[in-house]
Image: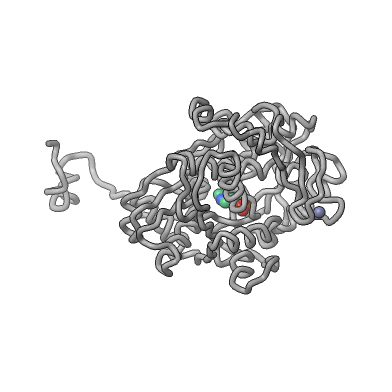
Length: 416
Ligand SMILES: Cc1ncc(COP(=O)(O)O)c(C=O)c1O
Ligand SMILES: [Zn+2]
């Protein structure tokens, strides 16, 4: 907190102390954490960061907490140079930011929750919770367990079974609301107001959002302290995409990276694409939609930070595109087949959109692109059940094997 200047309204610029308030009293705009960048410059050097453990806490001076209390192995996920996938897509330099292996709950949400949970303790909350499309519920529940906080997570009633189990295992109250995410979110806002609980993406949202910047910090550091030409990010509530950009801008501001900022592109599923529709129609504020998509983690029809996504995409010269359910499943399979990474439909959406943007010539073959893979396929494995081959069943002898595979096995390789 040493370098936190306070909370600033994103719309009108009014300033507030760094407490648990989330909307501007003047204009109801969202509040953002601001820092004393001049003081951080020179203190937070590349050498200082590189000497620290490989987690998101290596950027502590740019995060809004006193000291880490959880998430000690969150962040610093692999940035994978994907040569086989790049060849298939027709580009030279493609990287995957692989948050499907983030800790402790295998999605990008472990970044935002590490910060929000730590701040919840600092601000004295006894109950920690969230409104979630699935991944956030798992992460909030795990961090609450670790910190010994009471926990309430609210989800739409029709989530994938493993997303629900992956939250319930940590012992929170899991509340399945008969409605969609936007109904869940509205209810949670009322609950926060009435009970004064600390909800990661509601009254702690300003802090939560800061966790998402670390994806931007890591991309630049892992590329050798430089920016790529393009970044493709999924969009649901709209936290991640603008914060990747904020992370890049801050690295420039404190003198850690120089050069042109990347173009940032938004990916949404066709059945829940308010931001893409706003970009296409030239609207500043997205119009709410009713979501219906296989990508349940991205099924938010009325994104809290949608206008910030529109602004950042426009400002950076980025684009937006949507992916159909079919394209999402194809992309999940392509990623698994070429790079050995199994992602959920959110990652499939992002990769499918990257493919579209390459085809449209928005991303050129000689330009570098980072694709944000934000969730893990094992949580939603059932979406692929019709797409993968069943095991070939055989008897126990070598002859049984050769009866089926004899011809095919010859020439595939030998024991050397
Ligand atoms: C796997 C995954 N990716 C991306 C997102 C979208 O993030 P945001 O709400 O920050 O736009 C979510 C959020 O719900 C998610 O679960
Ligand atoms: Zn304001």
